[in-house]
Image 1 (cartoon, rainbow, N blue to C red):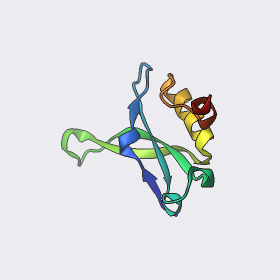
Image 2: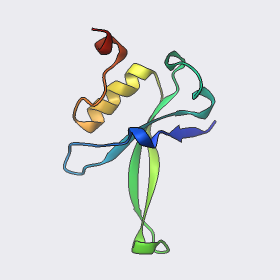
Image 3: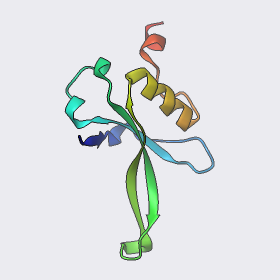
Image 4: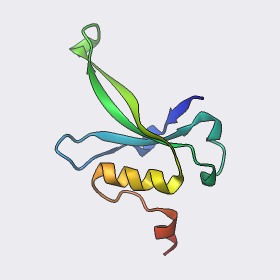
Length: 93
């Protein structure tokens, strides 16, 4: 079971650390509807690496996985510290 990062959804948090978060999904559910779930929240981490140019490498690490669409949006807004996306219930209202 692979997981994908949707890099086009990456946003910088409004916190002192300015961490970057992005949505993702299980690879086997990418073509399915949102109701199928399998959403993932990713965080871009900076790691020290003596062999890399500049001494730093960046990797995506999952924060939470197997979320529903609304759970993923709620958690992402909480992590970003601002309301970047609306849940389906908020969009319908």
